[in-house]
Every structure is written in C-alpha cells, then in structure tokens.
Image (cartoon, rainbow over all chains, first blue to last red; front, side):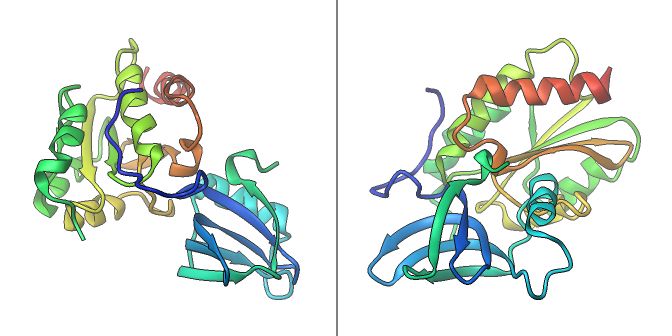
Length: 93
Length: 139
C-alpha cells in the first residue's frame, strides 16, 4: 500500500470513526482513540440525545453522513457501563 | 502541533507530484478559491490515521481518469493550520475532517468525501467515488 502514515502502537480502531449506542439512549459518533479502565476515549465527538434532539437518530446519522461529523466535544470518555454496541460509521445503515 | 517538516515532506510530494498545487497560506487559498467559476478540487491532506494512506493513492487513481476538475489544490491539515482553516471556510456547511476531498463548482461544494468515507476502504473504492463525482460535475 502506498502512502505514509503515523499510527504508532494503537488498537485497530484507533482513529476510526465509530458509532456507539449508549445505554442511556444517547448515540456517540466520533473517532475512537482507545479503551481503558475508565471507558472509551473518543475524539471530535457528536452526540445525539433523544430527549433534546429535534431529529430521530437515523435522520441525525444521515445528516452526519452527508455533511460530516458535527463534533461538539473535542474529547470525551464514555464510561464502560454506558458504552453499548459499537460499529463503524462506514457500516452504519 | 505540526510534525517536523522532514517527516511530512513525502506526504506533500505524494500529492504535488500529481500536478496538485499545494496552498500553504491564507492568501494562497484566497487566490485559488475566490475565483467562482469552473471546477476545483481541494484535497485536505493529513498525517494522522490510516485514512490518509488510502486517500493519497485514491487521489492518484482518480486523477488518471479522463474527466477531472479544472483546478487541483491541496492543503495540509495539522501542518498548514491557517491555510487549512481558510480552505474550510469555502466548504460551507460541510464539517472539517482530514483527510477529505471537496469538489467545488462555481464556488459551491458539489461533492464531498469525508474521512469516515475513506477509512477502511481500498483506494480503488475511494477513487471510484471521486471519478463518479468528476463525471457528474466536471464533464
């Protein structure tokens, strides 16, 4: 593979845009950084809250797919007990 | 914090050797993108993430296509910070990501490939997406 990248010593999801379904009902969309004892660290994260968002999560994700991730948080740690199903954004329906 | 220039030089050259003009300053960007007619591609180059290693070869494949934008530019995210921010100001409601590719026609973004649409894909797949946009907007 052509190309020069720096990707030192991280797990396979490092830097990849993922969708995490929160147990709380929130949806987290951003770049996976790492998973540790405290939880999942993500960077440049957009968060869908079903209580406050005017859009259903599917429509919200479709909007992010078209226009890019509208990050509201530079970095967050999602506690392990909050982090539910995880999938690649590129695989999201 | 930008990486040492000697480390990113090969990444710059992987793009500029394709005939893409690298925009290193705000004034470079304004001169290039303030012209509102015709088609222009802006490749947002990147050091970080495996996506960059897919995006540059994808761009090379796409630019071998018969139909392509009239003007070809790049900015380097994380390296040329001001130029990149200025380029993104021309992308309207499209969110920043790197690497990414914007195709502009008459000053408006008509196609955009985000980082998340590059990650995990083979360069051929990304190149197809680019050439489809070229065919749709540059023919």
